[in-house]
Length: 290
Image 1: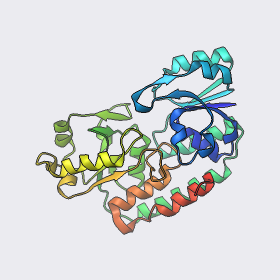
Image 2: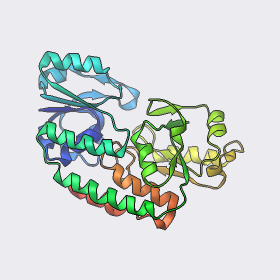
Image 3: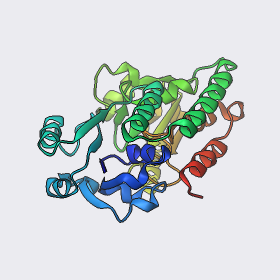
Image 4: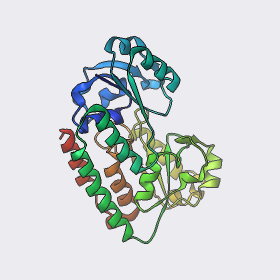
């Protein structure tokens, strides 16, 4: 049996054919468009609505042989998880995706640890990453891109989403922030000062921030003389993209990020980059959802 905390890793488990082995999930997994079959599984953790809790008693009852999580410490510390796993004789696999290559390698490792079949997912990665490279090599301009979660929380170079920007033949300005943190909060005036040369801003939805809220934030930017000091705002290049769990969300630490690269490329390069709909449909077909 497997316990999986992040929805992104549960998606990978499903794509390598081992979704039936998942006995415990984080509460967010129940919202995942790709994972309808997991909505009745036992909840071993939750951080929705800003409430964070690991349900150690449920984990104890399940007694999984494998526990999957990211190295980013949200619900618990890695030491807590390792100590618990040692007591119940479970293996812990903590993953960290900084590059697209990490995502591919991590998916392969999950297949190995679960006894899954990586072949179909591997083929999906190979076909589309090769196509993305070919398209990117044909482009000259590399637009400057900054990505933000609600408020001014910048996606940094330690985040695989930043590498998706680079893969789309754009420059990820989050790499200017020297940190190991995946997202870094800045004051509004500091962001405007440091990133005024951004050609494009991306506002990312999340479980806690829907598109409607971000549309309000974007409107405030367009109405602000201060925000118009940022080139992207002044030129109207502020895009809202999904990082939540619905079918339109591709800025996630999962295979969804492959259509996400296409989405970034399309928004910053226009028709020079293929549309994301086709790779998204291919991925969802692999997931067995419409």
